Length: 145
Length: 145
DNA sequence: ATCTCAGTGAGACAAGGTATCAGGTAGTCC
DNA sequence: GGACTACCTGATACCTTGTCTCACTGAGAT
Ligand SMILES: [Mn+2]
Ligand SMILES: [Mn+2]
Ligand SMILES: [Zn+2]
Ligand SMILES: [Zn+2]
Image 1 (tube, rainbow over the protein chains, first blue to last red):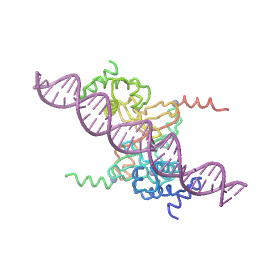
Image 2 (cartoon, helix red, strand yellow):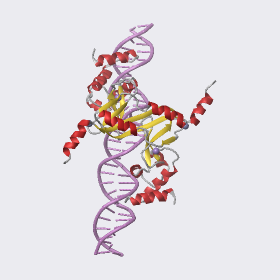
Image 3 (cartoon, helix red, strand yellow):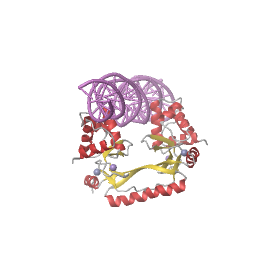
Image 4 (tube, rainbow over the protein chains, first blue to last red):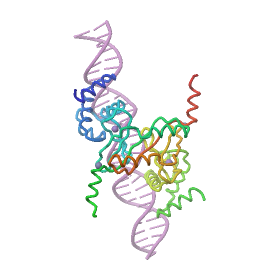
């Protein structure tokens, strides 16, 4: 079964219709290599209007099919989710490569904070930025000894 | 010395002129209770054009006078900084109250990740969301026993 | 007095996203 | 099959959060 079929079934199981525009958006998402904006998608996806692309991305986000990636400049990108559960990202600011982090690194912290702060903590944002090994060695090549 | 004077000196020390529009923006910032948008500021601040308000907020952010607060919906607000150093926030999604967290809770984590991931980690975003004690007890009042 | 340059505001522009609304179409019930 | 309905669609207007352009101003240096 193709990824597209699998996602179609997932939508149908949730009561959503799998229409040609939605199929087009999903296909475009599946073709994206790394993280992308809705505009990227629009350029690679004839067969769905702008509003529908935004609506479908929102849908896919709610279903956990894509995840939102917050870049260091504050802009939001999207990305085909590699993990169904809650997780965070390590983004290379050189090449844009994204590493999904296995587990939520702050769950202990959240528990601790819940106790000490008096707040009931219900959510958080966490993203890391840096340079991947490949981009680091590239930089080194350019630097005189 | 008033806060306004102190900030004026800080600007001058960095080589910036303290002009009436800048003074107006700073005064408006000092009057804000919690976090605010530039639009909030514009409504409470005659004496500076929109572009200047944005420019001044950017300046104050660079100087560490205000900090950016990322809300759970992804929108960016600003806030008079209570701590000069790098820190994170705990935001009440009920009343909007912001708690500044003393230290960066993920610095150990960053070090650990730097080793295990092969990335050189240079930055991160971290914000927590929840309900403060006051908002929690309010909710309880509304809930039937 | 003149020069220079940081700062200014009006307004254009841009990105990213939502609201509106008339029209299309899939599925359902008879 | 025909009628109904609920979902879905795209064009378009609109909104927010900024940045850019550009002619102008005004402080301060010489
Ligand atoms: Mn992810
Ligand atoms: Mn802060
Ligand atoms: Zn890289
Ligand atoms: Zn609260």
